[in-house]
Image 1 (cartoon, protein in one colour):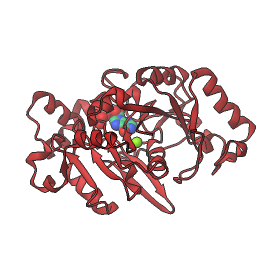
Image 2 (cartoon, protein in one colour):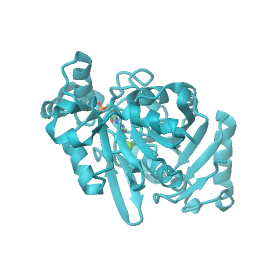
Image 3 (cartoon, rainbow, N blue to C red):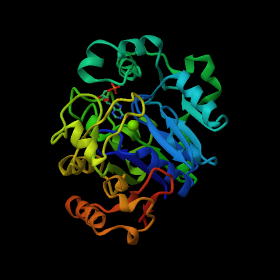
Image 4 (cartoon, rainbow, N blue to C red):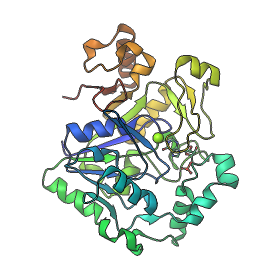
Length: 333
Ligand code: IMP
Ligand code: MG
């Protein structure tokens, strides 16, 4: 299987965390490595009756055999990083790169007020101001922070060596394609490129070493923060459809709309995705809840999936049918 990368195809919150935690258990990668912007991304993972909200560590940490790593392109809040290692019990197998940038108190303050908060609707996590400082070359790096020393590793070297040994590597993207600083709805975007290429650069792997690019789309569209979203539903319509969601990091009510084929098609193009994952099919079609095979899907759900494959020309290989890690239909061969 080599290197598999999972990215978001819409505006983030596609349900990547659940897909990644499933792949981390099923494919048993030796390393799960996270790219993306920083702790502005929240992934929610459910394991049995336990719910984990992850902002800094890769969502693949549930597999106790996997080492989890954060690539040098990601800015790290040391408090969040250390707290998650403690809360999730992953000390000894959690690492970050020497060159991860560091979020400090003043970045959090700058991100929680003024233009970033009001116009862009930033998450207030300090990610944007830290990335801005990185571009100015004044940002502190992980290697300068005492409390992080024992977690530091050369992430690009580790993952490329693992691939040389024919191990499986899972690369975890954050946010979604249309929040990309280069390709998204600028200025209503995050502060990094979050397409597959950007995530590869974040963790230090070249494009020829990627075997599979899985783009994740939710069965409907949501967006938090400001910025354009065609066909946006009113709060009332959203709640009638049962598509009401609240942000993992910010708790904000997410804006919602129908599945958007134009956005999906562009996401596939930008990341050369060869597999599609559709999440939360059970929210659209409650009769699908917990299904683990195509046979268990009702006619409407089946034709929804078929229509996506026909219109987008890429195979749907993973279908999420509930919040649990194993509520999934896995059609990969
Ligand atoms: P920032 O990345 O915190 O600066 O926020 C910029 C924009 O990206 C805002 O609209 C945020 O709501 C959005 N955003 C950033 N990270 C995520 C994410 O992981 N999921 C969804 N939206 C995000
Ligand atoms: Mg999220």
